[in-house]
Image (cartoon, rainbow, N blue to C red; front, top):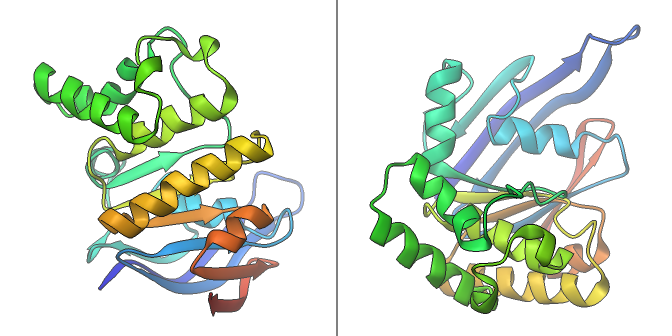
Length: 227
């Protein structure tokens, strides 16, 4: 079953002196349970595509459907609510809230969803345990390594049981050991719970783990291969 469907997506940035055509007619589908990497050279449009699939940016033209819901026609407020309930995000820079502990960072999404305190704490600790960092639950981001911070970020992305996770260069700031551990955890979750992961990456370690690799060049899909 297709969980993401993008049809004829174009994105042009006109804020610069010369218009930048970031995406040029991208059409693709992602099925439930995929572990997919979107790859290509810097400037090829992969982060732009991920942002549009996640409703963080609007296409110049084209349509994105998430679980048969057209998000390109939504108002900004409706889109915020839809993202909160349906999409998990993992960013290169972790984007944790520095004054909150690890468990409070994971709980934050559930707090926005007005989940009860007991449920928030139980779900968050369960995820930190799955990430192998339950013992770090009450430490702040500054007290954690980069790899540990990114595990907290993945736990936060998973907290609300989203339809899929979008991960933008999630291993870019991690050493080899942290990258390997993080990828093993995400691959295990994909296998055991059929959590859908879509990465933008140039990291060969991520690409080797992926079950499907979509290659972009100059804003176009030039290759789409199953591993």
